[in-house]
Structures are given as C-alpha cells and as structure tokens.
Image (cartoon, rainbow, N blue to C red; front, side):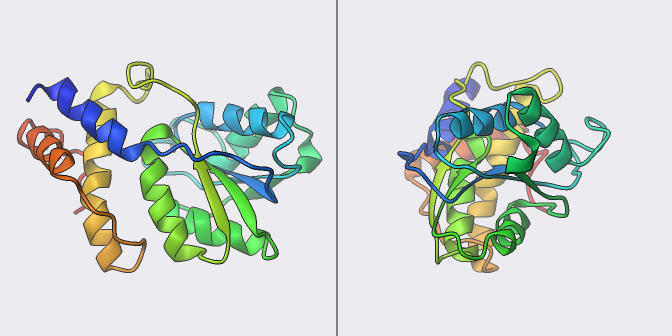
Length: 208
C-alpha cells in the first residue's frame, strides 16, 4: 500500500461532517489550524447559533505559534471575520479534547444541542469524546471543508498530518479503555493503513 493511499484511508476514517441544525452554541476547539475559527464565524453568520465558545490553552503545536492562548487567538480571528466580541465566550484552560469538551460544558450547563467545530481529521475522536464526556447533549460535529491535499499547513506539514492521524487511531482504543471516550471499531482497512504508516515511521504522535 502506498503511503498517501494509507493516509487517505485514515483521513476518510477520521472525517465525520454531521448535518447541522440551529444549536444553543458553537464550540470551536483550539488548535494550530486557524481555519477552524473562520468556520465557526461562518456558522455564526449563517444563523446556526448566537454564541460561540472558543476552547484551548497552549499546546505542543501552538505554544510557539500564538502569543496568546488558542482560545484567544481564535477569538481574534473570529472578530476579524465579523463576529461581535460579545457573542464569544472563552475557555482558556483545556489542553486536550476531553478538557475542551468537559470545560466548555460547564460554561453552558443548559445547552441541549451544540455544534462542535474541529479540524477535519479530529472529528471522529471529538465525536467519541463528547459521547462520553457530555452525553446529555446532542452534539453535531463538523470542520472546515478542507480537502486532504489542502490540509497541510506551513507550520503543520504533510508528515505532521500523517503522524497526527496515526496517533489518533492509536488513541481510539487506549482512550476508550481509560474512560475518556466511547469505543470506536477500527475497520480492517483502517488497521492495515495504520500499520503501513507506523511501519513507514509516521510515529511522532503515538501516545507514550
């Protein structure tokens, strides 16, 4: 199996893109990918919610990228994209997806339906996490409609993307066992693609 073929299989596994409905809040998960903030702004302007939460402290991929927390950097971008500042709430402490979800839930305890916006290749892990961490809401998971070929960025290149997807497949089993997310079945084709990329050395993001 070719490397890029294997990576495309993982990409298809990770991408979810739920159908969206008007919701109590849009939650943007902080990361190195500012396109997530812009997507949140697009959904706000489309009338899908009147509130946005941006969640995220600083992580391994963003501590040198932003001068502020991920949440604050995303807020600044959303304001540039026309979202009023008073429509935005910030959660500045989360350092991983579980905390993004659980900490954001505390800001909107009466929410019943939420839209969660993340990177395309993080959607499935996000869905599995919210089902465990915030089961009382209907969570609609989405992302920027970025293609596989367009997803790499200057500061997070193709190799980093492949390593990220490999690491998140590995986390599906271990995180479910630790109670962080619901179990996700790994199809044989995905397992084969995962094994191919691991054997090729795309292991930088594997859990320790």
